[in-house]
Image 1: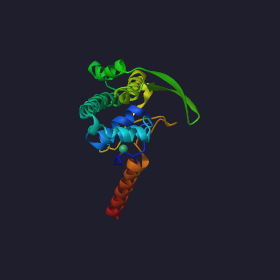
Image 2: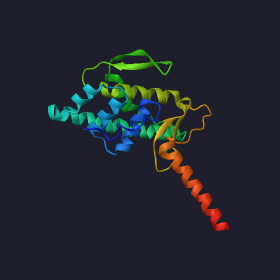
Image 3: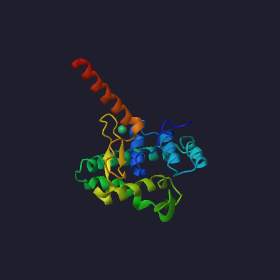
Image 4: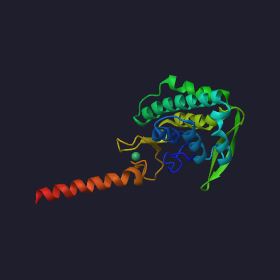
Length: 201
Ligand SMILES: [Zn+2]
């Protein structure tokens, strides 16, 4: 079953932001959407993803635990990222679910070359299912530690709610994506100008 978010471009620019965005778009936490997100983000291979989709049949309890962890982490990250975007304080309770995952996940950092730039990527040990959330928790922790330097913003379209890291050269990115929100805004602004001009004549 293809996930609805499979075709959505990762506008957040950071794994944890894309994770929160994907939950926002799917509007409920279900295993298929989460696995779809992991596949699109390259956290799991398509083969591994297909295998994980069978989890509710093979181990229903583990599947339910995973879905509830996804929802809990997603909820707390949305609160933390919203606060950051509004330049408000991060409440220490929000760190608990992130720390929980960091605590139980063993892994190591690896150098990864992407678009000509080197970065450190966390590689979790692949036993148990907590490792599926490990890279997301790590990414979230990095964003929280970076603070204002992460340039976390929320889309200027009030109906959108997607987060992104503004790494544009001008530091004035306003939209989750031009196609999704920017162009719509431009069209609406043009229509308003056009309309008022018509009324004026
Ligand atoms: Zn948007």
